[in-house]
Length: 247
Image (cartoon, rainbow, N blue to C red):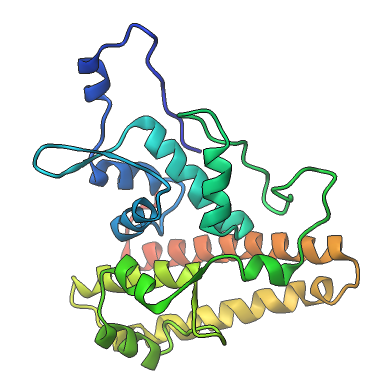
């Protein structure tokens, strides 16, 4: 969980400037809770109007603690509740300046307790991106996207759009490419991910087939929980194999 401190009413401009952070610093803060976040994702969320960092005269972004708190809220609502950015933006706009709404627990409806549980299909169709938006967020071109699709790393939805996870995958593939790791090298990782997903599906399948909407909502919460656990195990195993100490 991110924690930020707010200055009192007597804090001056100099003190406020000292609390501003570069995008690299923000990335390090967020990665404690969101290890998959990238600079490209932060820039994308800015382009969507979720945050408005200050700019230095030379054009560098400077983020306040409030910006970091808003980013954490956006990432949690996407990860835990599959909410579209439009809805998240509306929730943020409805709060007082500098504040963020309370974050419901994974599996709990973001709406009021009296509302019905959302259908699983409705949650999964929440964040849809067009091809151009995906390319802009990942800072990639058509040739790269075509290559990623060829190796099965990214796949469009039936309507031709992409889900929010595609942005994360694309950004990470781009980052790995800077180290000389090409999409063809990632086929084994994709195959392993498919096997892990199949294992999770076997566990939650009985819940998903249930006629009760609340039980199906619980299946989605269980899926996210298991995905998080398998992801952490995978990362720990890789670290162990490389002899890297996990913090």
